[in-house]
Amino acid sequence: MNPNTIITDTHTHLYSEEFDQDRDQMIQRAIDAGVSRFFIPAIDAASTQPMYDLEQKYPDNVFLMMGLHPTYVKDNYLDELKHVETELAKRKFYAVGEIGIDLYWDKTHLKEQQIAFRTQIQWAKQYKLPIVIHCRDAFDEIFEILEEEKSDDLFGIFHCFTGTHEQALQAISYNMKLGIGGVVTFKNGKIDQFLNQIDLKHIVLETDSPYLAPIPFRGKRNESSYLVNVVAKLADIYDVSEEEIATITTQNSKDVFGI
Image 1: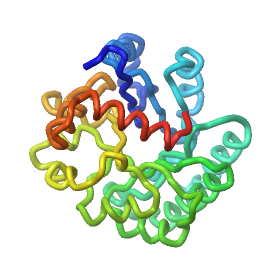
Image 2 (image 1 turned 45 degrees about the vertical axis):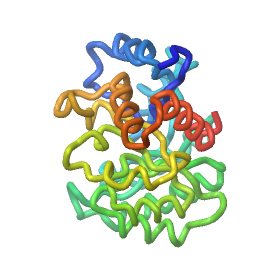
Image 3 (image 1 turned 180 degrees about the vertical axis):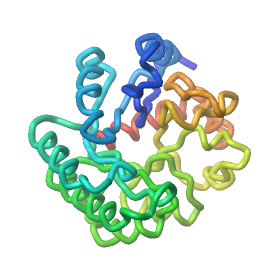
């Protein structure tokens, strides 16, 4: 691949404690591999300061989102939402995320998750920002809210897309790009079977590191440099060069995030 080609990781938790021992080296490995744009999703109020620290250290590479992750929607979720609202009013972010619904771990706060998701979508529209959606075992619940909120100013990324072909088309119909990462390399990931029927203009790349490492690192800590394995797999699926995958998906990320 051309050394000037830029690969964009649209979803990486660089502030995760799993990187505390070697964060700078890990980021450098990614940059050396051509992955030089990192979009960082928020989780809850505790992730805010570590995100700001990263941005200060890597101002040319790190771009921040603000939001409340659905698995962090607990009894104190209104306090957490207040924090998101305050931060959004204070400074520039590139997306509201990651937000959504997760019924994999726990269904007890579904109602609160739905309120938090809808509220944050409305803030994204207010600030004309994209949303970055976290969906686990919750396609119907997510689509129900997107259907009610759909408009020209609702757009973003369906992070870590793992649905069916029909669900992919439905997500795209709401102005969402599909975030594709390590799962596309898994034997049982299934999305590789229909992805080439989805135009590349709807695809962005992500790692979700430190989670969901691609083959051959599956089960180990993921990191942004491993995105090259995802690029290689997509080049194979779409029967185009790795260069083309990197170029198109980075342009798509610019279309979403505005940078």
